[in-house]
Length: 191
Image 1: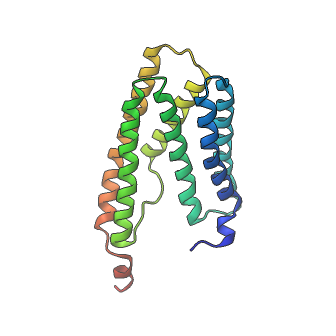
Image 2 (image 1 turned 45 degrees about the horizontal axis):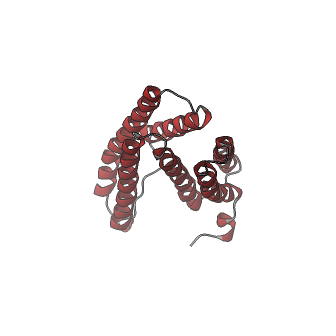
């Protein structure tokens, strides 16, 4: 399905690397005897590779269909791992985790339904999705960097992340409805 060149393109290799860093980060974070700075460095490396894979893909015209799958998958898995790790630290994180889980399941299910129905797919993240992703990354990284934030500040930041994730979910509904109503790719070609 995917060519060897596409599978082994530099941006996609960086995406695979980001995914491979997730268990490393979780191990370092969840071991109490290991200083949290190591987990923070791993997340920092993951963030840098995320930035570079996009820059390289655009600059050297290496944007691939596989890369359009790998990059957001790496983002979602990384964010999910961060949220899960912080569940142990902050009880309100359950709210964000539930909303995040519902959003990602909705996005995956609707994407598959529409792809199967008419061959269409969502063309990247919308503004609310990008803001939500950035917000979750920023807040989680802040939690990694500053371990003694007052609980009121932590809870406020979690609620802001949950609200932005919920807004992103709601913002995708009209886009999926519009895609669902489109004719099948084959039907458009025969007209």
